[in-house]
Length: 504
Ligand code: 5AD
Ligand code: SF4
Image 1 (cartoon, protein in one colour):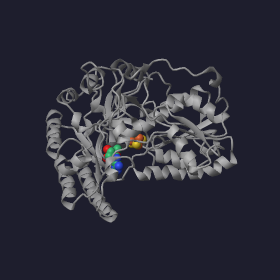
Image 2 (image 1 turned 60 degrees about the vertical axis):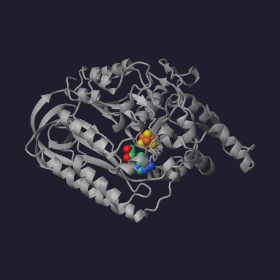
Image 3 (image 1 turned 120 degrees about the horizontal axis):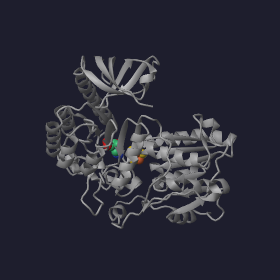
Image 4 (image 1 turned 180 degrees about the horizontal axis):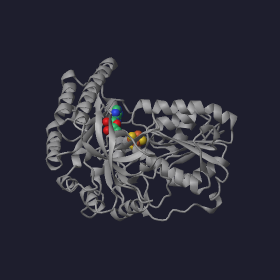
């Protein structure tokens, strides 16, 4: 465990003192060390207890958590909200009314980090007005040496920094932040055990997230996640199944199983059990829709495809990040599959699940990407015929192997490639959506449309957004909608018939 404090600390006079001090609180992301990750057993703790002296620490106080990044982070926020609620805090939607503000950060690209630093800057004024405010920074950015360093040196308004492996220690860290005049830093460079039974305040009552594993051992050369989230650790099947059953009992209509690389689920067990086995058990639970994210093509095995083909509550949407369409670049990215192997996997999936909706993630402008290599991405995109994609310009991440690669592609070229890719993504998305015109789709109604409160909004099994007119009472139910007009990102329809009304 690494732990430390600094703010105007009298014993840190020189750069050398500071460097020494930093070593005691933090170990930087290191590819060598990370790859040497121990195979030592991950302990599972089923008992979560709040120490007596912090039990009511938040009574009469309010908290606000701002979340950046992926669904894993969104779900971590639900856990932190659960812990804070247990401590007596109440949520607020106004930052200015909060007594504790946590920024749950994302490190995936530079612009994600810039947003957080902008927000930390803004909060300086609030902290000045309200010195008793506790301002905490957590999540993936906190796992990086350079970030902790920058906050320690330039942002003394921050009271608390903690990482992704010690969320369960929030009660103790808060107590320290209250009693200490110095910045409290606790970042565990080594991933911790699995803590079951942490409290959660879920964001909604319709769709819920369930973690099935933590961490990632894939080490794609551009990606910071294996460093910020640690090694792969799978939750026990029985704990996952119980959590899904509990959500079903509470009336949830949809569950998304979460992991950075869900296809590696179970690889750390000493018994034969993978994502296919887990899905095969979960599909028997009485809940209308089960999803999972995110997949790595490498470990997407035939057994999983066979199970997904059984359909039922296993929806026919697979997010299958390809990242690039050229085998040489895929090799440099450390993706361990070629273009042809990926296309073969897609063929197998389409053969088994003919109405499958495929979506993907793509990076353009990887170091030294040539025009021809980029065009391979365009041709692969067309060949697969994805329904949609998240597209990104490569962003070098300190500590990753790709960040050390020389790069001769000018930013203007990368931007232009992104635009060309996005034009193709839009063209195919509209084309795919057009096929739904005059068809009836099953929609899980999530709420009123943000733009127009007369309109309801929901998702199809394939994760497409549908807008239609209907009474508020349909929120949280599954309904049949006939699609009248397809747009690039949404489908407009008319209510056909109610399939199932939530009993509560
Ligand atoms: N630069 C740009 N995009 C990245 N992603 C991950 N790391 C980087 C990076 N360094 C993208 C990948 C991943 C998605 C979550 O973010 O496409 O699948
Ligand atoms: Fe961002 Fe990755 Fe961390 Fe999610 S796991 S918050 S995408 S860095």
